[in-house]
Every structure is written in structure tokens, then in C-alpha cells.
Length: 212
Ligand code: GRF
Image 1 (cartoon, rainbow, N blue to C red):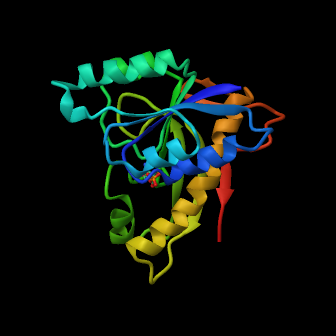
Image 2 (cartoon, helix red, strand yellow):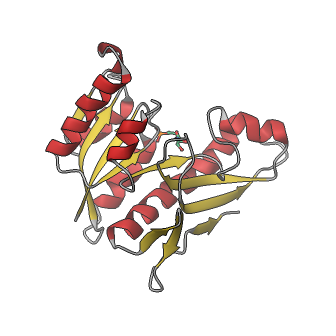
């Protein structure tokens, strides 16, 4: 069982999808700790409900990013975390922290990277008139929303879409994609070669999902 730590900042619906996946008896990973930088994050309640140790580490209580991250890192180490999953975690991480978790930290982002990295993603997709959007699970590197892509799910952008309708369509795919990517890692079915993800021949998931 690969030991997962999950970093959140809010609602935690992707955390919930990981909790649900890990509750299946044949899922090769378990969540050993959840950390939120916001004490009021709804995701903390989801973790508690699932009997997963949940920690609120309020970044505002620390004098700088490094001391906040040290506190986070200590908890992750104590819990024996092997793969760190960012799920709606809204703090920028320092290079030092990213380095400590190099190739052991992944993120889910609600666009088809490298398009539309950053924030206000769905608004920008709609503004640009893009016809396809989706979500990406990728390894974390120093620059935000970069790093080797593990998997992507594509969805259509419909003419009458609003933020709510597009984000709901993308989220539905996020809930499928994140557990699939975690499974690939836990089953040792992928490698990073020259900063690209390479799949084993017998990988059950080839990294791409198409909806609609
Ligand atoms: C998701 O859209 C995720 O892709 C992005 O932030 C959102 C988090 O939602 N990084 P939730 O907290 O998982 O419900």
C-alpha cells in the first residue's frame, strides 16, 4: 500500500474522490494524513469522517513560507507519506519544499496543461472561446502548474456554458482521473524519462480520458 498525504485548502471534493477510491479493497494506496492550510476547509471534515488524521496548519500563524512548510513537512514525514497529492491546495510552495518531494508530489489542475495554468481557469477558458477543456494530473515542479503530465481528461466546452456548468463537467472528470493516476503510480506503471511520463506496456490506463 502506497502511503498518501493530501494537501487541501477548501471544499475537498477531489480529496473525497481519493478517499472513496482508497476505500475499495483492491486499491493499492491509502491516505495516511490530510493537511489544510485553512482551518475552516470543508475537506478536513471529510477526512475526519473517514477516520483519516486531519491537520489544520494555518499558514497565517507562521512568519514565512519556509516555517509553514517545515511544519507541514514534519507531519508528512511522521505519517510516513510516500506520495503527496495536492488537491485544491492554494499555497505556492518554495523551491526547497518542491525539491524535498521531487517526483513524489502530484497535483490536479482544472485545464489541459500547458494551456490555462494559474487561477481563474474556467473564466479564462470561456473568455478565450476554447472548444475543449479538461483537467490534468502532473508531477509538481518549481513553476506552478508545470511538471511531467501523468494523465489528462478532455471535455467539450459548450456554447452556452457558464463557469458553473463547465466547472461541473471538468470536476466529474477530475474525480475519475486523480484516482486512476494515483493507481498508476502505486502500481509502478509509470516512469519519468527526460521529464516526460512513460507508461509500462501493461498499464491499465494510458493517461487519457475523453468525455462527451
Ligand atoms: C479543483 O478544480 C482542482 O482541480 C483545483 O482546485 C479545485 C479544488 O476543488 N486545483 P476541491 O477542493 O477538490 O473540491
